[in-house]
Image (cartoon, rainbow, N blue to C red):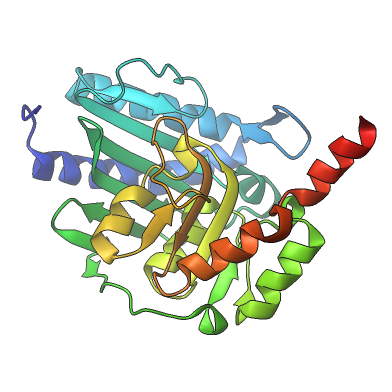
Length: 274
């Protein structure tokens, strides 16, 4: 077990680094340049790249033996479960940043020998920091969050991207739940589950950096975080993801996977094309 660094010291240094973003973001946004990756909805900006580069410089200076696994330029997966590994989404909700200049965040998590140890989701526009330390709880700014109270699906607001579910599954979820919302940034949608505002957030193709911080929040708050087969998620690979109140976890998954599952229309289309 690696024990070279003091976790409390790292925690304080990271909080300071995140707070310094408040001074930098206005000029970064003013000079923002946007490009696309896989399609016109998959956006990247120089803001994403500059924040990631700045954090790389920070850890190289203060913690040179730490590894960085991040969305834009650091995707090597070798030995990430050994020693200290930071997983980062420099801007989660890039489309929101570009289109609204709102509802985006920084996601950052430290894994030590593969175990989630420190987690941060920083709502930059509102200067709200969700943070957690292993064994010490989860917090919104400096106020400790309580473990969640069990909530049935009928009383829960749920969050998911309606473009990736077939109509039948989507309407079954809407019918069974209390309501539906989507912020459009996985970190912020998940944070609503931390606070009890949402019963669940569902992501059908989560990348590791989308959900890096959520592992520890789930542990500290008594939430369920699994893939759609109710199995643990590997932080190196990501994949289908649900974080939820324990009172509605199984019911949501039963609906997602019923009668061929949430992707059944895509499966039928492939069959028709054969």
